[in-house]
Amino acid sequence: MPPLTSRPEWKALAAHHETMRGVHLRELFAKDPQRGERLVAEAAGLYLDYSKQRVTDETLRLLLDLARACGVRARVDAMFAGEKINVTEGRAVLHVALRAPRGTRIVVDGEDVVPGVHAVLDRMAEFAGRVRGGAWTGFTGRPIRNIVNIGIGGSDLGPAMATDALRWYRDPRLTLRFVSNVDGADFVAATHGLDPAETLFIVSSKTFTTIETLTNARTARAWCVRALGDERAVAKHFVAVSTAESEVRKFGIDPANMFPFWDWVGGRYSMWSAIGLSVMLAIGPERFRELLAGAHAMDEHFRATPFERNLPVVLALLGIWYDDFFRAETQAVLPYSHDLGRLPAYLQQLDMESNGKHVDLDGRPVDYQTGPVVWGQPGTNGQHAYFQLLHQGTKLVPCDFIGFLRDLDDVGEHHPLLLANLFAQTEALAFGKTAEQVAAEGVPAFQVPHRTFEGNRPSNTILAERLTPAVLGALVALYEHKVFVQGAIWRVNSFDQWGVELGKALATRIAPELTARDEPRLTHDSSTNALIRRFRRSASA
Ligand code: G6Q
Image (cartoon, rainbow, N blue to C red; front, side, top):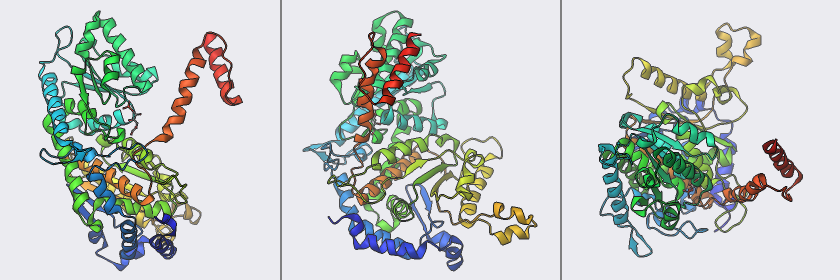
């Protein structure tokens, strides 16, 4: 494979960028009155308007040429075929199998994995039915009213995001809480006001060795046993979700109360597996299956649709256009939906852990930008905070706006106002306001530059009819595949995360140095040594 930046398709894009840098969206819209209806694509209940992007038909053609030249099609086929495309860990990458309908065949190491997926889903459904129906009781015979998921990273962000997003579909009798941080404040806040006799903990950890999760799980066990006065209570108040049965057993949870998944499910791609148990408990098995069906609809669209109409491919290429050619460093995700408040954090992990890589698949350092910094907050709140920089700052920040045509809550006149703000922001970012327009409004001359908006700030608008489980599934799968396509073009392994290892290893070394009775001999740098001593002095004061 030739290095990406020496490919003719890359060079053509670089040359084209020179001609596009100064082109304003005002011009592009003026030249093509149909643009707003032409540069759109639709699939799995999602409508994507990418007309407010700084692209022409030529840009799109060149980007599609790049995708083809980089073998994106073959990479997609390899993923769906269960090939071990996570090369550094020797694993297949099959979150698509987690939402494959019964009867589909996806083979890994000679075994069709789909029946196993459905067997676990059926067990989860049976369990969820018992908990939701009151048949699964706590140690004292009381029904479960509180679910606390203990997990971190991929074993937390997906379910936490999805249970918030699907608030409207949740069983109001169940309280859902999430504990992730090793900061004890998280555990205290999550269990505040809960009755241990009515609380079920789901310990979610692929490896079951993650220090934060095990620390929180031990604290939870002590909290439960202290209140209920009997070790046997653990069997009724703890279930595990993991790939590591022996570790689960070691912790003291009966494997009969364990829901398995598989090493071909990456942590940040796992909310569709048993890691989604808290989601299923919250919204019920049927709605959970709708979530999977929505994701599957996006999988099918991604697998089978020509690239020019393929939502994940189009999103990915637009991202690369800004990231690599305009050198935009970040990507904002702005849901105009309060329930999607945690989506930006979820996508932050999905994107940054997947594509925050500095070497290609062969281990060679890359000489181009890989994944962007992903950030965002729900609208309209952000408008009263950081949108100033989006409109008038010196940085180019491509934005994804996400909204729903219909509201789920009927509480008055909120929804048209919410959508008016979404549409207005994309319009203001794209077209701005010229100095002439500002002056014509009678604004004093000294204020004119301050009140001018240069515009030409690109955004996507993603709309769906309403926020349903299926739409959420499609939306998350859209971003999963977008990240995949970008990783394929950048030739990075989007499925490992070695970058988180060093800090973990150092923390394991430092933790005993903080608590050792005798003064330890510290051999870190002078800064780290001084910080450790400061902690020790404070602890012994
Ligand atoms: C995700 C990462 C990471 C992982 C957590 C939790 O892709 O691998 O966020 O999910 O470190 O790991 P465990 O599930 O093994 O506890």
